[in-house]
Image (cartoon, rainbow, N blue to C red):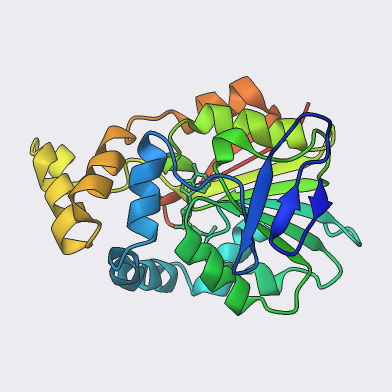
Length: 252
Ligand SMILES: C[S@@+](CC[C@H](N)C(=O)[O-])C[C@H]1O[C@@H](n2cnc3c(N)ncnc32)[C@H](O)[C@@H]1O
């Protein structure tokens, strides 16, 4: 790749790839595929700030955002000059809490989230890429650790995404995944009224019909089974008062 004023051009003979830089974000993929398109539309929309109210409540119930996130971030190695990949970095709410000497690459499908991440973390060693977790535009064995918090359940293909994280991690590097439990919204399912949960997600929590439908479709995903198939020494534990999970393993 050769850097130009407008972005990056591939100078590998015959390859005409041209990746534009937009607001400090390298655009690898502009339109997303499958359920990722629904998720990108949601995170780029006015609905996400409304859901953030519930997000804040979630952190409050779990002892405050910093404390609750520390359960996950503490599983990253405390090495100097670490190269970290953050898949689904979002607005980088916690990026500033990571050691200053780490260099971070963040991938996300939402241009709005990445723009917010760039603003929030101005001055940090941070490269941001607009693209999908399932098709990481990154070299093999490049990272000392990989983190993915808060998006895994809703990836179009979580297993493919995890395999990609393994591919770009150095052998033995920790891969740290956390999210709400996919079936955390289950009042309706318990009452035998599954449509109630979709209604709560769509209307009460402001996810909108499309994203609420995605959440419903992904509620049966067996995260621990995916981890066991892809990661070495995979540990899975329930966290955040039973509402979330933490899965940690190594790249084989
Ligand atoms: C709830 S936010 C979490 C952001 C951040 N990691 C955090 O913990 O605050 C979920 C993020 O996942 C991103 N996302 C969803 N599906 C994705 C995919 N297939 N590839 C990359 N990012 C994805 C969304 O755009 C959104 O920014």
